[in-house]
Length: 224
Image (cartoon, rainbow, N blue to C red; front, side, top):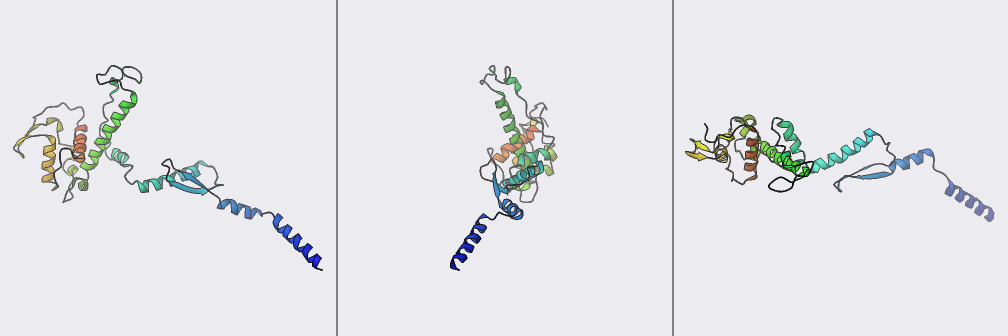
């Protein structure tokens, strides 16, 4: 009797060890398996089912999930694109292809040899400063206004600023002024904001923006 019990127990154990998963159990196990996808910043991740169908729509969803996380941590990352859309009439910087003698490598400029990548970098950095100026010009808080007035409220898209006429005598100041002097006068009065130092990044950016909007206009200092 004891031998029979041992035999039955052994058979039961063997059956349990060799039992195969049902299709339902196998599918459930696969669904639980995850693959971690890492963004190129080497920090942002998202987990997806290992057996997720390889469709374009699913791939886009993964990319969107990664970028949503990244943008949440970098809320100001798209400011350049936002400013370009908000101010489409800002002229592009000069191409400067003239510094390249032939092809992509120049050798005839007095300041040295420049490649196409240099020219592209100059344009990008110049436009970046101008776009930052546009942002400040249109933002009362960035300007430090205590009454919520921004420069564009009197000068839409930097209109009627005439940077090409500076330096000139300004009756408001009682002396010859540079454009930055007139910007500070406006900060003092219509904006009720603190003046900016000449090397304040906001002042530099606004000067760049105002000048860029008058691209192509001849200089005529002292004109009223």
